[in-house]
Length: 288
Image (tube, rainbow, N blue to C red; front, top):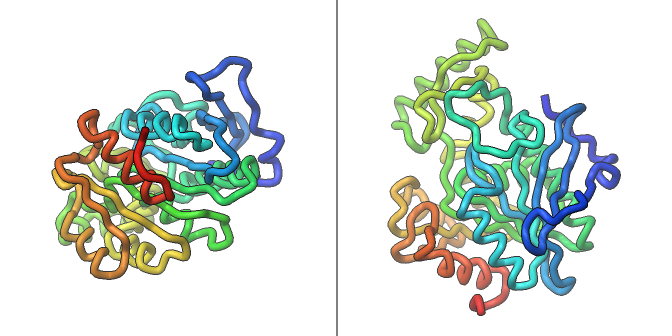
């Protein structure tokens, strides 16, 4: 189990001697004995809010959508923290296959995200903006829901999708019932399930249920009752998300912005459109 010891945060973050990328430094955080998380950090101007950007499910900080956005915002003068969740793997550098053995849980992911957000706020002396891509946005909302006192400026959720989105209501209910039976009879057993884009996802029942808890209803409620400003940005050509659900959020008072022509990943043709949307949300226009 991943356990983050918050009182040691100041001691556990270290800069490596070399730059990770131009203008950035590699940061490490010990989240359990023998388990370290990594992030890239770009220091920016003190007048701007610091920004944490989280990748999507099973991905890393190298994923193009979050990497391009981080570098572009760093060029605009923002302090940027771009972590990779460990998913239980020391200094995880690559994405994890669906068929791998998954021991991580939503609660562990949230604990790591909380630790990074705490450090970024302490480092810069002001609440950070939190940006999540795809299910990274769900984890941002789960953290805000679990830690009411965490200082956060606002949340920006890109290509937001909830867990179980790919399943019909009946299929999702059946999957939950199966996992609950497995939890009651063999809680430590690893079994083959499905989750998000993974048709084969090997984990223990409690791990699966920790993610399935954040379905459309739970996430929708968290968005509508959020204590900080939340903006959802999506591409109009995104066929991986439930756009009718997003429209329902808008009618429920959540700020939802559509980017014409963009897909789930905001590829090179629309990366500046995404950047402009994000800059507008956090208070600056344009990208030049």
